[in-house]
Image 1 (cartoon, rainbow, N blue to C red):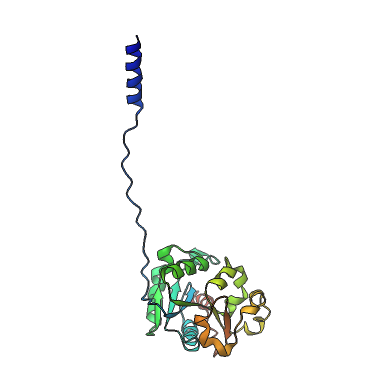
Image 2: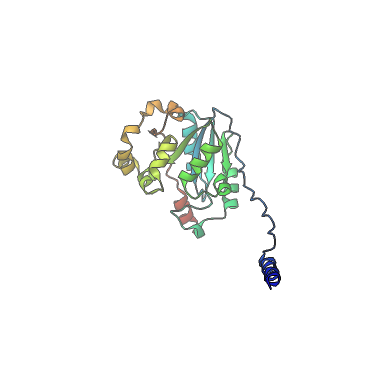
Length: 227
């Protein structure tokens, strides 16, 4: 009887044993195709939907390149703006091609790095770029109209702590800049405009407002005119 019980116990254990599982293949991590970025390079980052890109984007870029003494300026064409309806945007490839057609400048580079790394928010993009590009001096570039709503961005204070910020004056925003919530919150980190040439290597938080010839063009107005 004891032999039979032992045999039944062994058989039950054999039947309940699960078949060996096949090892899962290692998940491949996508490495973004970044533009060349040697250490010490001074790179401006102009993000947006660029739907469509226009001469105003070029004007802002030229001001930033000249006044901040940048080596390159990357147009970060976003796959979708969290503050806009993604269904209303042209396809990413369409916008990228339009940007490449317009930005015929030797120091302006069009990239879809945000789509490659899956970043939806500027703070996530900046963290990834700083991690993947050690030694590169990044500057976030924005129009003055964006500064007025900067406090609505996800982790906007973290953005200011990650990289220096250059704000380019835009029509309709000039008289509102000083009273903007972000202007007041970051007033101690503001640099004089005359020192803008050193912003790229400044330790954040550091930001400046640049005044130059302004362009009234906007992607929103161009889309409305096309409709």
